[in-house]
Image (cartoon, rainbow, N blue to C red):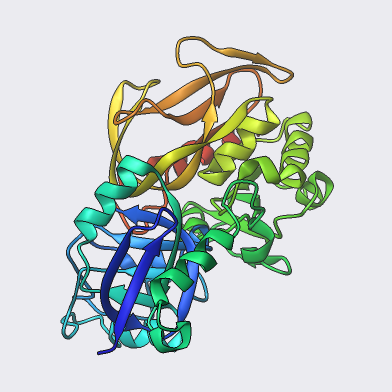
Length: 373
């Protein structure tokens, strides 16, 4: 096993062993708290440009399989684990995680103190990072050369990444059984589990590219419009904001998740901001202020909506209130429009991977479309 090094933009350095592909990579360092679901994390388009640090100490026990991918490929810029499994042990496994990382060109590092790295990111905030397992090519001062490359890399602030991960052409996911409704989905980095959930509820989903206009979203006369998760800074996605405003003008039922929640917030005139280290993992408690219940939810976001928690906000589309709040830090986790048929959440109700507490939100979207008929 060859030596590898990880260098943060503030100069802190960790040395370990190569894991996955041999090479050099740079991205934004973030940590994910899930004890399982690493395959869904690796193939989630929302992680493009990010080096994911797994906080669970042992990763790879269940290998990889052909059923749990959330897209056609791995999107992460790099992968960091403490103790990689020596061999997979699961009846669904079709291969090892290490081999798949190498096959898809994902550079990783293992054998480092991921707890210390996570604590550092929690204290200092998400930052740029580099990993290299080709230290000879970097020269005698490999860590210094990698640090220079890290500091020259672009920041996630201002990054417009949705078009890079979105579908290039529209496609349709049919309903299972009797079709009840048709939904147009704006693909900002959609996961395969989302239209699968909708199909089980009798929804045919027409998935359109991230740059689709309101006219294109509404062209087929859908019963509702869905805004997906996705990567990057919502402040850079003006094209999506304009499309959503057109949907709101048409008073078509709308449901957004994750990045889609931030885009709806911007369309309503609310601001967004970058979180210190974001929320990523499968165990985030969220208060549903409408029902008074607490949901344990799956998260992956580094930005949030800026909205008051103590009162509704008056917008060009009527009043909007914060419907969900993160119990760890009071971050806005959902919006509910009171005068137009639109709502959104910051977390992932498709539950891939993760708890299923939020899955009924898809039924809520179906019910909202049913009320309009």
